Length: 355
Ligand code: KG4
Ligand code: ZN
Image 1 (cartoon, rainbow, N blue to C red):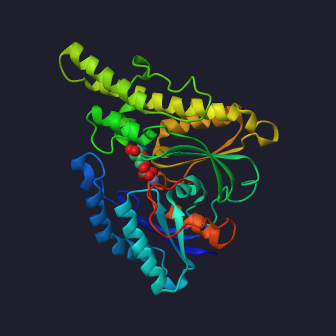
Image 2: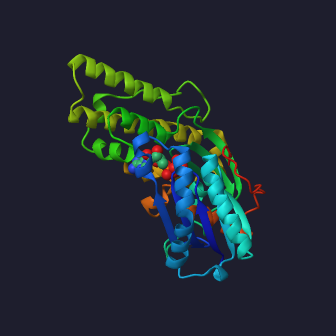
Image 3: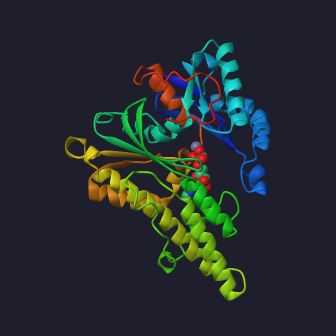
């Protein structure tokens, strides 16, 4: 048993959670979406102020919901990066003071490692988790898709990761948000776009498949964004007025299909590579990040998992896909219980941290 109080203030959510190794005892997320809506994106100084106001009550609520006091804890974890520097600073300062006051060890966690391992979290100790063998012995890949990142990772062990491919420009969530914004769907637009896509016909405006001539596993979403902008302008000019609801739904479905097709194309390339042949055949895929909540992405990945005989592991609830502190507690618990090597992160904010 390793009880961790964790904090994440990397972007626009103030979150505190209490986790016992991989079992979530509480996970409080105070969202700032309403504050940033007028700007159509995250406004750093507004985020910092909101984190400052929310962090103490969010921490108290997390402890109360877990029915624990600071004396019951084994450690404190906090996101050190990547993220918005002024936002990260609030969480780090609060966690550092809390740990010092209660004589607890303080562990800095990489936000991306949190997303990557989020499928290991469970809501109770009876629930199964891939934390038990065969993982990490069998070949395991990770796919992180969020508003800031899109990465393919080879998980060799806890704390031992190799980046296989990353986006050269926009992230998958950012691309869907930007196309959604062009369609007038507000902020963040991607969840609304997913709903409208259910009513749309993706085949009416097929999106191009990016980076097919490159032999690496990198991703690029800015071409899809440009394709959407040109298409919307053309449709509006031709009909001399705004898009109809049917057109918006068709474009939403086509954009979502385009993003997912690109992710699966590159994932298939990895599965087919000589590095993952024979005894290295991929057996597990961990999916994390805000876009992991997307049911169309999940269904396409599930079909691929069936065809290629690997297990797809997704976070147990949609809330665990988006930013939350429970996912920050887990890598810290693994470190404290020595199941993962210490990552030696300096406990200072690191806005541009890699895995
Ligand atoms: O992981 P996350 O909460 O924050 C970052 O670390 O970036 O991811 C947020 C991203 C946003 O782009 C948001 O629009 C997207 O995840 N997202 C979705 C869905 N829900 C949130 N994208 C596609 N489908 C969804 N249902
Ligand atoms: Zn995130």
